[in-house]
Length: 171
Ligand code: UDP
Ligand code: MG
Image (cartoon, rainbow, N blue to C red; front, side, top):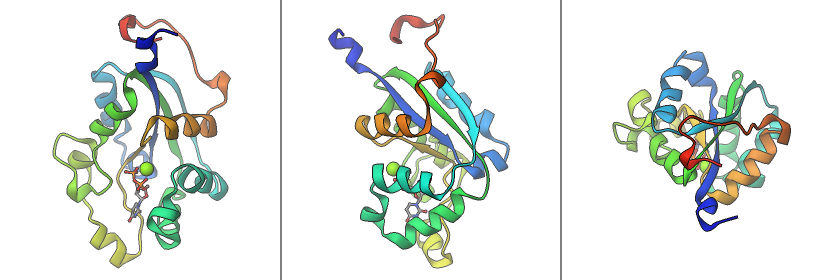
């Protein structure tokens, strides 16, 4: 593989239960499509606790970083309904998707990011109330996390190679 091919990345995006239940999946998805990211996999699923433990702790080290209580709040939030999981591909797609999504806390997310434009919540309030932070989408934090997350959420035959009319910057 050429050097430039190493810069073509895949990122896992999950539309969390709040974006599905609020009916704003289309609006959010447009943010990713309009920059030219390519959808190479997509499905609606309702994962169980084991899956979220693998996703948030084995891969994301969330309990290690933020504690078991925060994980439990987040688990309760994530299991309120189905989610839509997606794999997006493009040039340095992992940091690009994080930039489009914005930081974890909606209160700190700039306008123009998904979390800044479509949600409002602070860690102070969610901690005081004992709830997960509803911030609409999950996005892989780095390339190594992305590879593990895609393997957890998708079977190889659920990811598609197809030609994109903008194909210049995809595999
Ligand atoms: N989360 C939460 N309370 C916290 C921190 C995180 O409910 O105090 C939730 C939030 O929905 C976040 C997810 O747990 O998106 C994963 O946390 P992480 O630190 O990996 O943030 P992200 O990578 O999603 O920005
Ligand atoms: Mg994370």
